[in-house]
Image (tube, rainbow, N blue to C red; front, side):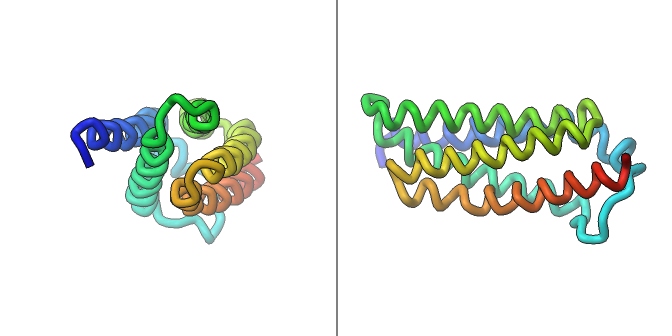
Length: 159
């Protein structure tokens, strides 16, 4: 791997981890205050699980992003896939803003459904270019599926 490719890989990981950091700016202030006051289902993982899981998922997203970017921007398929990826990443941040920042589990649930669809769409466009890049997003899609169920349940328990 040459220096240019190493820089692309690092940038890809940084972009994704950066999205996680932006989301955390909305999440962290609410964890020990508002979030602790909510009724939560018994299947909710301990808070300590979320940070490491998201860090790993953003790392996998970054590697996946790199594998697409590595193919070059000359291809319309690559440019489209990257645009869909960017849209999904914005939706990912948006969920944190809605759920934790605005303290709105109801709006956050509807947004996470859209996020989930955007992840599937991203996986589809990535699959057309690189099977591995698509498969690297599978744990993320599964985690967001679980998060959607958790979000919905918290919303219903606190109406």
